[in-house]
Length: 332
Ligand code: SAM
Ligand code: DTB
Ligand code: SF4
Image (cartoon, rainbow, N blue to C red; front, side, top):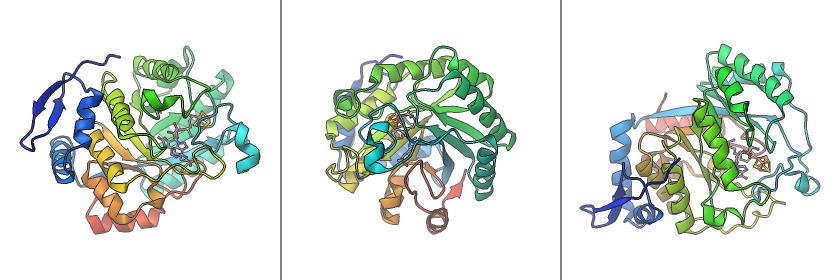
């Protein structure tokens, strides 16, 4: 994976922006954030319409197949074993295959096209991976796309997942490199990059994004997006999570992010990664319909669909249906 240097040019809006295919610098992405809001939204819409149907939204449903008791210390997460006493999320065993099938069928019947299974692991043990592979096969048999997020992958594990037909592997950079150590100390961002390379080399699609609203600066948000855009190629799917500030985590009192800054993050992601699906991910439950509509206008074209994320609530499916109707949005 390489990060090429960016070339700069001047738009009719008078701002300096960078252009693909030379790559994205943090400066160039930050310049997008600094555009007047209407100019940024206009540019994001233009890019969006060049590559996607602007009225279609992809829907993925999440299931936590192994909850709690995680060895890692990610500062935003409710599932770290070291916070079990404070937050009360108990360590659970890996779900049974039948439980997964029931949940996937229900998600399909509600209209989800992809089923994403997540585990609170630093990474999977080989024995667990074999059981998860059975789950992938069962979900594929239902005719759904599959995605897993199991943490760091070891040697040979990505190949096993690819051989089982897994479509996407989700592993996030989470934040800009300069802020990362303030969020996570138990594994490095470089280790995350190595997992992403294993996924890419095995021929699967990458789902990789991050979290905003953790008290990071705009510069850090721009840096995260530049890092994502410069993965070679950019991830096919880019989840932009708004921090769900969970009581008992180190992030519980993170300063609120201006909602327009969140929309700017989506727009900059759309412009920097024109052909990627940009997912409006965690945090939708707390967002108004109007804010979500602005995110769709800014180029978000995918959501997590269903009443629950991993351990926290999501916007209810019925509310999403009503919003899609009001906005004339169609499922992909
Ligand atoms: N354990 C695996 C890992 O860390 O890759 C998979 C599950 S982990 C919960 C998946 C992603 O969910 C994290 O990388 C993070 O981006 C996101 N996430 C977790 N807790 C969150 C929160 N409270 N708010 C927003 N996003 C969150
Ligand atoms: C991603 O980027 N966001 C999802 C999914 N990938 C696994 C997870 C969001 C978790 C939100 C907090 C929770 O429910 O525990
Ligand atoms: Fe564990 Fe993943 Fe939560 Fe980090 S984000 S503590 S690795 S479950």
